Length: 114
Image 1 (cartoon, helix red, strand yellow):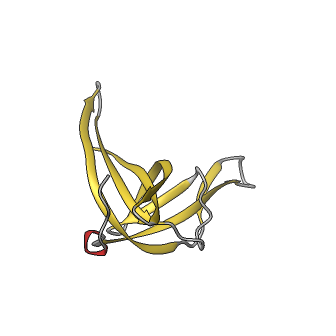
Image 2 (image 1 turned 120 degrees about the vertical axis):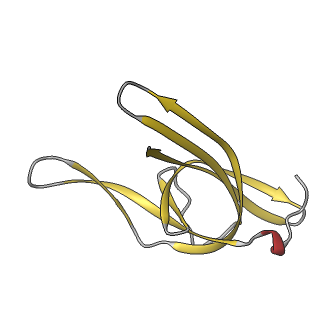
């Protein structure tokens, strides 16, 4: 991977930690996200697929964000990435050194019914 220039990082993303909490009322698992850290990112679309069953059409879009490593973020497997005011599921986070800088390569996806 070639060196990433600051001018390549044109999108703001917010990275949020998620936790599972049990609702006292009926034992329902509720996912919550804490406040996050907003960073500049380079976003690439990886794929777009459409699956259809009897009642719904599911569209899946997969993306990759490249961000500079940030000590203010606790990197965990369960994270949500917000981009353009929409939440996305983080599917993987990898470390990558490019040139003299350390980056995080974050794969994330959007799933919606259409």
